[in-house]
Image (cartoon, rainbow, N blue to C red):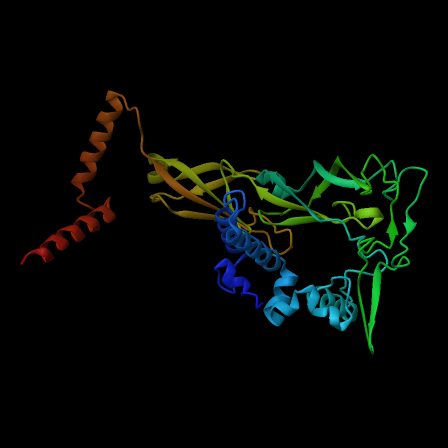
Length: 377
């Protein structure tokens, strides 16, 4: 009996994503599940067909073999006549063959003793900490070698024994003519050893979960998006394999005064109406203390002042950035009667001189007048 195409069974395109495969399979499983269709042989057959299709296509290696060889690439019986045996699919066989050639196979002595997983820790810093550098302590959940069995996975007083199926190599070899093929040992799963009496503390895994406190040195100049690698501080590998790494990802919290763009700092400085008109000096904060900012007379709101060398030096080196201060003229509020009278007198005095005191205002109104004149037909 010819099998239907797996993609056709699930009703998805050949380039369907994992989410699309899962969504389609769930829909079909709900529709044809035997519990929802008691006594319906056709529904049961459809359910098994969808289940088989999803099991193949959801496995990246099996899907690749199916895409290249069709059903023959994933049908265990397809290789039985060729002497592959052990229920091995083409995807397993070709994966092991090419793995042996290029050094990326799953087997080998201790082939399952894979390096521990890398971990990620998100660390928030203040702008001052990021710019000047600091040392922080972090508490990280991780897998560590089991103290009871010292990472072996075997009960205390016992030890793993050599797998009799593969002789400790972690792989089994099959001969067909002049071809010699090997695959991961099904008994020890590539470990080369069997744990007959597993450790009760770690259930034979050789690892347990714990929290550990680490001291992390933050170099000066780090910024959001930077990461710090702590080698060997990730999860412990299984059965004594090397540990992974811990990556500390930096995020700088928003600052009340400054914003950072690359090596430059920006801030907004409010100034009074009189200071803008007459000029003056202001104390401006920097990350290294206060400095004097000279405001020239007749300063307009929005003007930017650059204070060189008062910014940030990148963690990667280079020149020190600048501090850019944007002045904003603050309109007086909560005026008393006398103050209002003084402002009225000032306005009256300025009007006597025409528009020479407010050239931008004069130019703006001239532009508005011309705009409306041009609209007349």
